[in-house]
Image 1 (cartoon, rainbow, N blue to C red):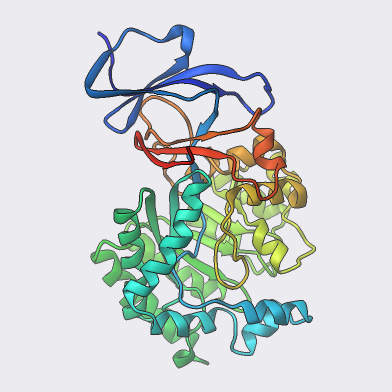
Image 2: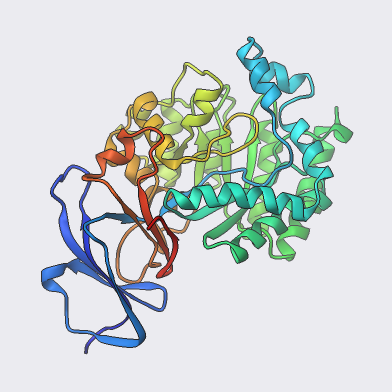
Length: 407
């Protein structure tokens, strides 16, 4: 039986990153998914659908659409002044304890209208799409009350409807202690678990739940209450873990089968072993490491030794990672953390999809998965990491439709 194609892409190159010559491949698309992919010489006879279109890739290198698995893309204002203060010697923790950091963005986000938040986030999201991103996770966590968290998550859902990118939402109500709960963290966690999370889940605004488990944020017992609340609602969990210290966040997260633990500069080998047993992905965020001028890097060799998949992401946020370039992030992961080219590409494709629990849809060019891919004007995938500040993305295809085209 002949396959049916809505569109056919020909004259593309692909490879594993170490193969400079690449293979000439074609991709057949039907109903937004990959119906066939293989070498041009093996292209089968097919039935063209009504409105069938054939595209010439002109020798561009093709990769899966990039998956941005950790962002705080919706927020009000910016924190450029805090960047100036850090340059003058103030630490992230000092700024946070003085009332800056996340709490300052909370004030700006609460004051912004839904339309204002959408407009600013849409500019940032379009930048990500222009560098090959076809799926993105967007966290809340700058509202810290039900009204503002709802507003943020509604904006995230709207971005997914109105922009050509698949959006997954994560509730991060346990991101910081809001000013009105100063000195009462347990009371705030009760609000998160018993008030905000159930209401937001019932409204269909939450795909996963995150928590910032750290000395300047929430303790292990407090974080566990959030994970338990997520479990009661059948929601997957992830965790900001071991960024500034090691207080047992990763051990906690793995006990609850976390999709990922993120940052991980201070993770220990016992934590990595627990991640391996739980199937938890290590999400590395080199832009935050760079902007905070950290010196203790995540233990990449331990992740390799214990078979823990490594994903990477921009961590786009207004305070510690004002980053909007997946390509620069891949370069940072290689130069700062020691990832190989192949690990960097996997970190932004198959492993990033795994970190979102969406490996069956994204991250690999295979029949049955979403027809999400990016075309690059490069001679080999090494150039995706090699160039700084070069927009090499020729076109982006999401669910079979061209959503970004430089020509």
